[in-house]
Image (cartoon, rainbow, N blue to C red; front, side):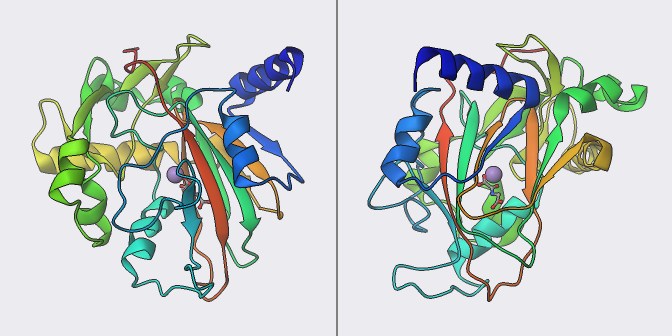
Length: 266
Ligand code: OGA
Ligand code: MN
């Protein structure tokens, strides 16, 4: 990719938050190489559930098909954990310098659901009712990878995984380092605490914020075609996938761009 094209893609990404590249018959290596134009690809820290590709370590497997090419049951631990992506979240927000963006390649796509939905969190922040705005301004929320297991009943992180990814606190209102605009920053599958609130009140506030955010007027819904590649900004969007028939194969490969700086308070 030449410098001019890279600039055009970056500009479109900052302006539109989600960019769709249709018809990309790419290998995992090409997927990773393209990702590197925007930052270092994350290597998923959790190895116990085989959500990380053995062949290309930078690839996260959003898939219900196992190594023997068999469709896995929803009760499989990896599938339980992946089911959390039906709830609104932003990727890898549990890291001290959370992800900048993700690129998802639809290899085998769903026709019975599996629509990926995105919310523009700049618009959400701008529209927040005063009662909610008051509760998030200048406040931090905790993001814990271990929350996933508690939420969906997948195996808890091993002691090593827990040690590698201790909970972190991030501002609930953040300023985008490129656009300078403010957005609401929550990730309902990882947020397990809020400064100054007890657990019940924190859970209630995250729920209210998530409900306010997930309105159709802030949403883009992507119905997949094979070999679509979607690139989204994790700093100013949240996403959630709709359910699909679990007997239907769905194979997507994701790269995640590592953040290089702490979240900027808004
Ligand atoms: C993700 C995710 C969405 C989907 O890959 O980060 O949340 O459509 N998945 O499966
Ligand atoms: Mn996700």
